[in-house]
Image 1 (spheres, rainbow, N blue to C red):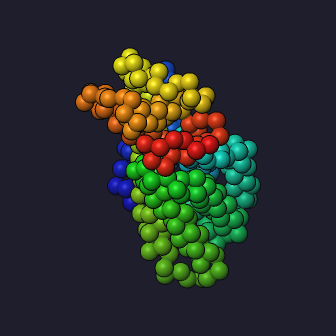
Image 2 (image 1 turned 60 degrees about the vertical axis):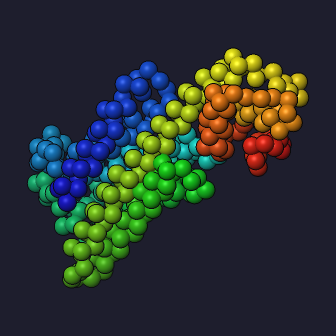
Image 3 (image 1 turned 45 degrees about the horizontal axis):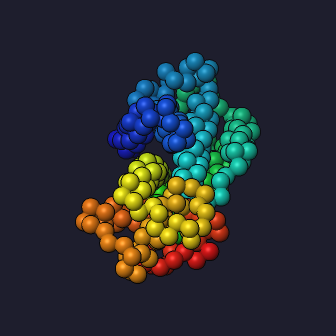
Amino acid sequence: MAVLQTVTFAVLAIAFLVRLPRAITHREGRLTVIGTGVGALAIFTLGTIVPQEQLDAPLGGHNLLKLIQTSLALIAVWLGAQAAITANPTARRMNPINVAIMVALPAIPFLLIQRTDSTDKHFLDQNIRQLPAWLYASLYLAALAYIATRLFVAFRRNRALGAWLIKLGAAAIVIASIIEQTNFTIQLFTRRAPTAPLLSTTFNLVFYLGVCTMTLGIVAYTSTRAIRQWQVPRILQRLQNDGLAGSQSETRPHAPSQLGELYLLTVAIRDGIVSGELQLDHRQLRTLHRAERIIAHSLDEPLTEGHPTITVYTGKATP
């Protein structure tokens, strides 16, 4: 598992470093950057990069690092999920108070675990037959599954590539949480658990692959949306410079955003082409097609007052 943990750390660290410069100067994407940074820090505490004994020693060497690790993991997953949900205007955001509660609750049973004075990398596995340890792990895994489920539901109807990666990663985290919860419950109620090594290995494999997949999906989804937002005013300006902005301008409804304005303009241009009032050259048609592709990928965003739906690009918006 050391290789898988190292790969996961590398994915999170690279995603953090690549997007950090833009996050400093642009507000968009900061949650993603912070989430990947916190996630990399959580993986760092596993001891793959630096031995856990060295990290836990300043904390007293009582395995308190384990609690910090799970808290960082919860915060990282929540930040990543919140970043993706924020980029999806149709999804309902999660209350920050919820994550505070989810981080605080596992700490209570954790402090009741009878611990040794030495750092143990397998601390939880060694003490899982203690009821407080099982309760601590159960609360942590339930919180992970809850956040991942909320993320999956938020993107269940989104067919973008980034959204598929997000859903795949979120589903993997939920499945991994169920596997680990099953493993811990078997160990709690049985003296011998021959399936424990297999279930533990399966959890690690599914969980870390899920984290990597979800991270790549969130970065891809938020980056693609940011690129589209950057392109909208430029394409709109290009159509306006070509003298197409006046096409049926007096009949177009008000648009609360540049994306909505671009949508209404493309519909008006298509109406003009169908009626024979407009003739576009090849360059103008390429710009129009580019605008329509951006709109097609932005159908989850409010375009005009009343949230119109698009049926065909040669038709009109239906409020």
